[in-house]
Every structure is written in C-alpha cells, then in structure tokens.
Image 1 (cartoon, rainbow, N blue to C red):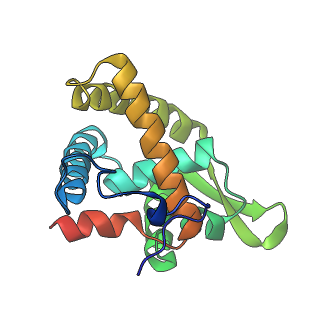
Image 2 (cartoon, rainbow, N blue to C red):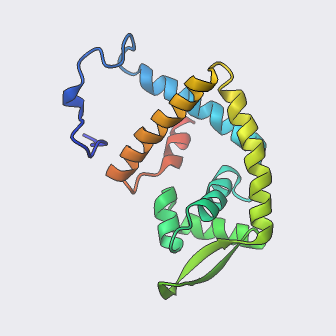
Length: 175
C-alpha cells in the first residue's frame, strides 16, 4: 500500500462519504482529465522550449526555488539523473541555463538561469498563466484560488511522504 500522508490525518479518519457522491475511482478519472487538459495547454505554450513541459518546469524551478545543486534539482522534479543531464544539456545549448560550481561543494554543479533564460521564463509564464486561467474558466475566482490551495496542500503532502515520486510517470501512464 502506498502511504501518501505523513501527518496524523490518515484515511482512517475519513468515512465512506469523504468524497461525497464519487464512486471509487472517480477521483482518479477527474484528476486525470484535469492533468491531461493542463498538459495539453502547457505543451501549446512551451512546446518550442527544449524539453517542452519538463524544460519549463526545470527553468521555473531553477529561478523560483534555487535548488542547491543538480542532484537537488532532479530530486525536486522527480526526474531520473540521466534524463536530467540530457535536459540540462539541451537548455545549456539554448543559452537558457548554465552549470556553475555549487557553493556548498565545488565538485557538485548548480544550475542557474542565464539572463536570457530568465527573460524567456517570464514570457512563458505569461502564456502559461493565461492558459491556466482558460483551463479554470468554469470556476469563479474564489473557487480557482481554493482549488490551487488544495492541490498545493495535497501535492506537497505526497511529495514529502514520497520524495522520489516521478510526476512525469503519471503523464506517461495516461497514454
């Protein structure tokens, strides 16, 4: 059994009506539809970037989360280190990121965004922001904010409990 909650709040605290009228499995179907819609929208926005959605996630993580080194970057994104190396190579070739010695360990490499990479990320984030707003068009502003908060809480909980989980595998499994 996959344990995803690391807090005192567990499935034992939920009763049979925790998901209302959802049938067992409905949650997964709905999440899959949302994920697929998001993936299609993002691919449309960032498809010309090396690595497409993964390249965007890497560039965003480097700029906004500032991981200590390449290993921490891969762990955060859940990307295999071989795949990560090729993705970084492609982004370096596109002059979006560069490898520098990690301040904490000169043997390790830290990935930083170039000025061009930061500017490109701003452009892409504007496109992604618009695409995500379009994806949420059926919700009002309050509902959209609530959904974003709840999704963040749940994904953070899962990521803490299973830090090696690869979110890209979920997309691959959708076929």
